[in-house]
Image (cartoon, rainbow, N blue to C red; front, side, top):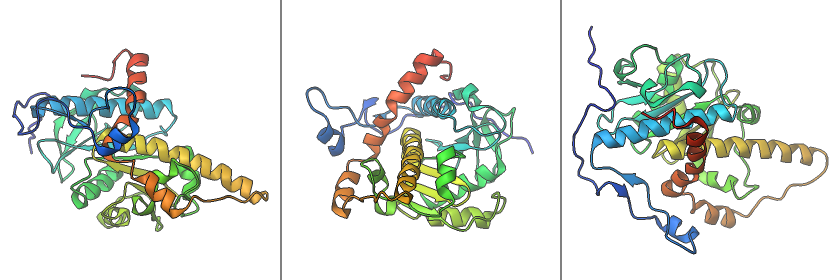
Length: 294
């Protein structure tokens, strides 16, 4: 059956949103800003074309950041990003291309059946990755992006089948329902039932999922939020492993109070997490000369 491919920049539909630029800063951004203008909110766009353009550039930049941090592992790892015009379709990375080489135009748009309907038609997509991300996007309309990698410390911590403890200010980003554990590893995800169980484990409010004997998965309103949460959770897993080793040698750990963790968690709204990732993108833009952009 023939397919109609939709190029990333082919649609001119105007959205009924705020004028292109920064949306009003969130209360959390206002609270953490002093001595100058407050960082704006998540950028808004006047057209689908402009929004898609920016989203795909940030997606490619996220892959470059992940490569620089050593999250690449053979064919494993994927990011999905819901299309701004076609909410039942999402963009993902070409199977078999190194993260450090990816550009915005390399991404593939797939529909609910896993068929390529836009973007790069020279590569397939990861079958297990499609099943995982498809189930997430169906179950969680608020999730526009999801990241899953086989990172070193995430895999190491996953073998315990435990949530992260509230031991640092950063770990409080994953307080309460923000993190969950999928404790039923059944091998590579090749069945719809397995992907559905993963999505169910994340829950209606989850931002991060620890997949036992597998790795980490994070989600967000933007690819920037999901990507920053992944880098943060990977580092939190590393710190937790160090703390566990120290505790095993007789040094007791002290958890923060539930009140302190909850209070700290409130600062991690989607706008703050979007901006948390911008320094990494800025560095990647400088290092690559903008090679990942359209």
